[in-house]
Length: 205
Image (spheres, rainbow, N blue to C red):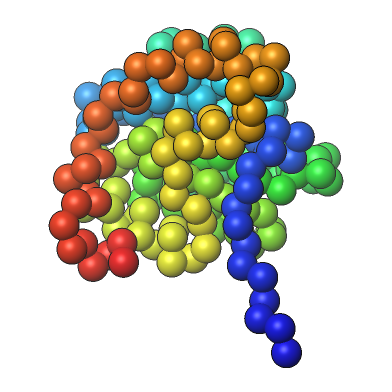
């Protein structure tokens, strides 16, 4: 009996969607590496717009946690309000209306809360989840590390923003490649990941 073919996690613009989770004002001073996380998520958003990848944005209880931060560049996106620690219930209708959807690219906060639960809900729907590790964080770096390991254990792919961007564009001959090249010319800002991944970290092996 032939072995089951592994899921490779390829990402294509026509079957992908970008989720932007809860990057709001009240989190600005509490989340580790918040400016860097938002900067990377903004880069993902600009690429999604260039490649016509759909984008969905949520806000967690905005009456108390404030609006999405302006530096994300999410003007024109209508945020969906939620109280659940997952994006999926608020986005159920959008997901149901996209039968071609295969891959969700996930950015935002917090890793151990809404990012983890969104990932589990999406995996439960049979979707592939690509957690943009340099665009996700938490108040605690321990929570961030364990959440990344937990998502990987459950079947999510851990990817960097640049790795996903280059998968999406696919070819230097792509008509949008020069614009995208400008966005990735400078490396993504350091968001503390090297300290999480270096050494013999048993959670990520």
